[in-house]
Amino acid sequence: MSIALKHKRKVIAEREGEKVKNAASNSHELTAALNQSSSKSVVPESLQKIERQLSSDLETLKILKGDQQRDPLKLEMIEKYRPLCEWYMNNFSDWGHLQALAWWIVWHVDLKDFESVEPLIYNGVEHGLTAPTVFKGTWSSWYCDIVKNHYSEQLKAEKKPDETVINKVITDIVKGDIVLNKPLKAKLFALYGKVALLKGDHETAVKSFEKALSFDDAVGVKKLLKASIETIAKKIDKQKESTSIKEGEQDES
Image (cartoon, rainbow, N blue to C red; front, top):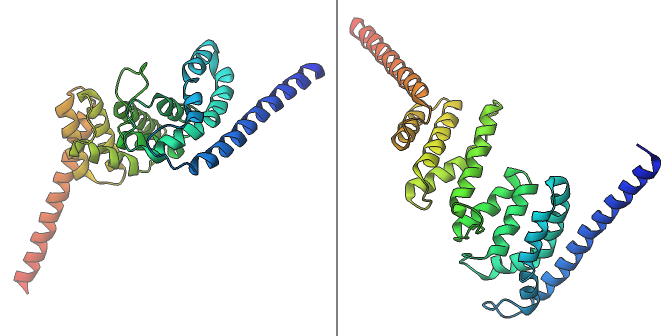
């Protein structure tokens, strides 16, 4: 690579960094001013101006090709829309149809790791956030799909994932707080069972696999279910055998 080209790339990188820093500085100043506002129901005019730019910014993203071009703009827009979205979150309990907030969280998902961004996505579930109109499903189904992909990747890499999030999702499904289609529910229950197996909890695994199969017979856990049932049966047989030996020893004495 020529020295001139290296210098050009360095200058471009520095300019992009300055843009993000300036956007962050401007957003923090605007947020501080808005926090002093007494209105809790009407979006301030300064934020309405930002909101009206969303369609144009989304169109710009469409024109760009690849993450290398899109990611710097997403970083810039995260800071640009931060005052608006933080105002939404602080003042509205119902987040339905807040498309700017939905996209703002989507950009976070695109750029950050699962653990750091999961609480933000789940907040959207709790507050009824409407998914971007280009999405085929609901915000809840999108969130659960991300959870499914994360745990699938963790298990495929033979890692022992933190079970906190999958526990929360399964609890919400059982309670009826999250409504999903059957194939996705089947996959989530299957993953829940596999996570249970990692800690030797065959009883929970059996219940989870049976639930998964009730939603989708082709979810792919029949062998795991059979193995867990056999493991539980052997455990029961050993317990009976141990009890029988102890009773025999007591009779002899």
